[in-house]
Image (cartoon, rainbow, N blue to C red; front, side):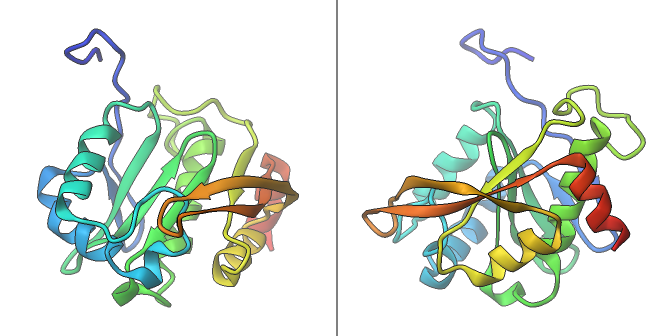
Length: 192
């Protein structure tokens, strides 16, 4: 669907897991998004957002998500509102707000997005705008983020070199370990 400037806009489908809704960000998410990403314990691991993170930053991010061609989902849970976010573009990336850590939400969202990706859309094949099935998925992680590294490995990702990435929240370039997931490795991890 074209935007006002004639560019194609990415359509972000909504889908559900047992506990979560993965949906497009809404303008009403701005206060919760700002609160989550203004927490240094969350943002310090991320290569995208600045820190401190304001509600104006959140509104700008929400407006951009519909424009940039990257599939960015808000992770929401009934009764808890915004839990985090997950995005799939050149890389997959995710975060969960601190109040929701250690509940498995990041892993649940990651598995749901990977299932859609490797199925060519939704697990039932109903999403015609999905990333083509079979394409490898890459992820980069801050070298000290052991929880995220563990989640990637458990999901079948394997080391795939490093890249040097700017972390605005740290004001520094960081050599990030990169990981790659192939469809066969993902299928094997699901069976394990």
